[in-house]
Amino acid sequence: MRVILYVSITSLTIFLTTNNVTAQIRISGEISGVLEDSTYIVEDSIYVTRNDSLIIEPGCELLFETDLSFFVFGKLLAVGTETDSIVFRAAPESEGWGGIFFEDDWNSRLEYCMVTGSRIGAINCMQSSSPTIRHCLITDNSNLNHPFGCGGIFINNDLSMLVEFCNITSNNGSGIFALGNANVEISNCIITHNQNSGISARGSISMSHCIIANNTDETGNGGGIALFETSQVNHCLVVNNSAVGHGGGILVGDGIPIIRNCTVIGNSAGGEGGGIHARLPGPVIINTIVSNNVNGGIYYFDHEYSYTSFCNIFDNEGGNLIGHYPDSLGRIDTVNANGDSCDAYFNIFLNTQFEDLENENYHLLSNSPCINAGNPDSPYDPDSTIADIGAYYRSRFDWVDDLLSKLKPSEFKISEIYPNPFNSELKITVSMPYSANLHVSVYNIIGQKVADLANGVYNAGNNEFLMHSNGLSSGIYILNVETSNGIRLSDRLVLVR
Image 1 (cartoon, helix red, strand yellow):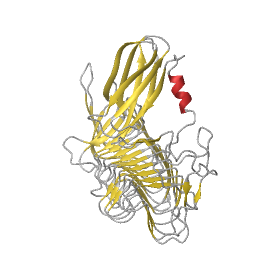
Image 2 (cartoon, rainbow, N blue to C red):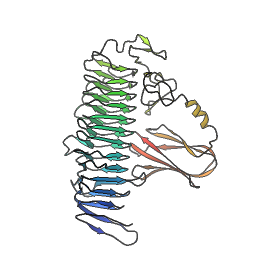
Image 3 (cartoon, one colour):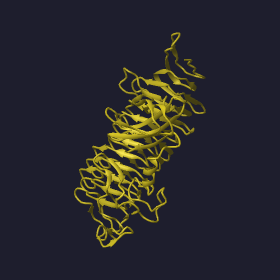
Image 4 (spheres, rainbow, N blue to C red):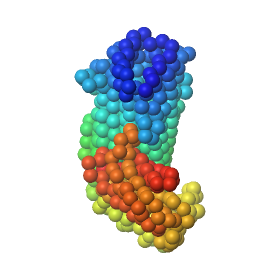
């Protein structure tokens, strides 16, 4: 393996052996150019200066001594791959490093990176920086010395940035913390087991198709999500979060955020609103399931008008609706388009009929009252029907898919991954038009194989394989399917504990 460092590295020592080269490269100070696949020991804080750039190639591992940081004033491109990620972590004898600080906007990118072991937050976006963060694992960082209590991604005032397909988990501090006037798009992320709230948004966020699960706030309010500005939360699962104060699932502290097509379930609060705590002026809650939360489904501080409509609010301990809200909210006096009893705002209060509530499968059964019960003026579901209530819609073509899956396939494909996200067990169906030698395996986001599900000759048709989550942590995993004649397929698996 060749190791090339271009331009300026102020302190550099290289230890190499011939044949099967093992490299240990010591770096500090200003760096730029290209870091090729190797292990780098960071002996003093490193910098990418303004008007300069650094490319970190897949496979690189940067090990930081105690409290040292990586400051980016120029452009950083740290772009790994699904099977060969880039790792930023503390050196073996280190007590924790100082995180990554983006200080200026040069269109930096972090992709397929793992950031772990920092004690000043993992990624800190300061001043005018707006990096793109995609397919990254941000885990086991702390907020020991962070002024805003953020363990994962900190986003300063007035920044606009994108975070997508990331797993932000097990950080001692907020998973994401955005200050006022920030404008952040968060999509397809898993944010779990963080302390000090999964997401705390003092700025504006647009969040879609995310899983916010098992986060806690042990000092205040908003265990899953805390919103303090006008934001949008769409098609998100908010599950099993908790707060010692108010708003176990979602706290709305200010502004008029829109919560649309979400499933808010199994959250708890020591104060009011285990599912959602709504202060003035209050959120718009639409097409959302609020179910099985502790200390109230939705708490209203003092609402003269209702912005809650076309929701299903059911079986919340302490009451489905609590606090001060209009008398017409929750009073059953009409029926909706499906003929189910509802209040004046077309909210229903019926058993949702999840596919498997006990095993945390929150897809809808075919007889669910939430199907086609959303606001008819909302965007239609992908099957061109009126929006369902909740984060996961049920297609009217499911029965067709079931029938087709029984027919002999015409091509190799991964025809089913169910349920996905999953909790304990996952069924994978691979369709084969003819017999072939098949290898099915699963990798984590940093490219380590975690399971072999199949390795042998399988007949034509639909072949099913089971994956169990024993020993695995919440996160994103990559399914690889290969045949002996060169066919390769892959897909994304999502495990939620």
